[in-house]
Amino acid sequence: MHRSILSRLLLLAVLSTAAAGAFAHHSIAGQYVSDEVIVLEGEVTDVSFRNPHVHLYIDVVENGEISNWGVGLQNVAILRRIGVNRDTFAVGDRVKVTGNPGKDNTPKIYVIKIQEEGGDEYAMFRDGTPARAANEDAIVVATSENASLSKQLQGDWSFEIDKRLPGSSLRLQFEKNGGGVQAVLDSEAIDVGFAGAEFVLLLHRENAAGSAVTLQLTGQVDGDQIAGDIEMIAGATNLTNLDAMTFTATRSSPEHWDRSTPEAMQPVDLSGIWRRTIGVGPLGRTNPQLNAAGQARHEDFMRSLYDPALRCLSVGPMRKYADPGSVEILPSTNRLTFLYASGHDVRRIYFDRDQHNDERDHDVMGESLAHWDGATLVIDTRSLSPTVITHNSEPTSENARIVERYWLEDNGDLTMEARLHDPEYLERPVVRRTQWRRTENQQQDIIYGACDPDSHYQTMFHDGALPKYFENRPE
Image 1: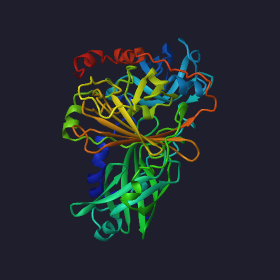
Image 2: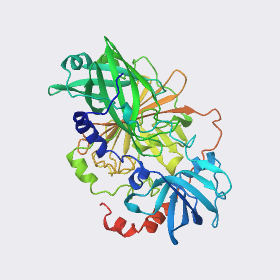
Image 3: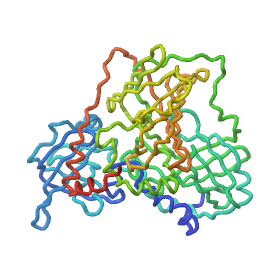
């Protein structure tokens, strides 16, 4: 496939979307410059070994002047897996830090790797270096029109990649859009470009650290089959996510995506302790697409500062799809109870209620009513408190609704798929999908991860942002 510099046409039509979502999803992306790397050396002055993020503070000497820098690391569980514990770094130690600098010249850095003076080096990711990075030479020249290819693409396709997806294949649709065509992947609208006999899609995603990544999909159509390559043209990732290299698609029909199961199939036993088996995944998560009202409301929020996860508050059912902790499902006569290790949250899902109570007070978990569609559990949740969808604080309204489907795969894994509907703030539903596996030892205890918002407020105090936090706190 021919590779060259992206034409101005596609750059304006598609990369403008990237700018809008460039710092989506994660607190790290909201506070740090993701495409810049610096190296600092200094002496540790303070250690805060707490969730949701561990922080060090170091004195850095430059041109004879001392400045104190905040050093942000991953959470406690991830650090322990790579060998960092509460006693690894102590006040007075000298460290060398490589990472992303703070935005607006704030004296802070988010760690890619950190090394004790004369000692061990710890990488926040599996290999410590990007496996794929920004690649301008891979960008495809594209135009906005190709009537013949547009016609071939229109319809439903079953989309697969060369890596494991959470659950079954994804639905890719090509729809008429004025005189051209628009793609919809998992409810996310995507502009389509054309380069000769190839079509081009740009997916805007995030890596495991929350920084922006753009994936370019370049494909060819052969009858009822599509095959193509996936290139990372902006951002970087490590070996654990966003590493898909090729994709295929097979023409399907709208009926193929009917998730209902035969009535003869019986409800299945979902009780027990479950652990997540797949996280962000090789294509990342779909970005929330805000409408005009949603964008206006979004401007009332300051990125990261008001994220309930960083303040150790409950985040609601939708963001539980990103939780790595265990979940215990307890059945009783009229409901299922979900006990989440992350956040110590409790969620009750009722089978004996025919309709939602419009007079019910709104709260973070809402009112969840369930029924069985054959062997598939369907949960409809309403009366949700307004909250945010990601760390980037995309808002939801009090009229938001979440519809979930849970089904067992042949290997016993539990696939969960959620769609967040909020016409007040969203152009399209937001889709989340993940998988759990029942633990073999059902007698083991669930380990609850402690969370202390002190580290979040301490970083704002260090940056002089606390007054701004309280002055601009949204209602």
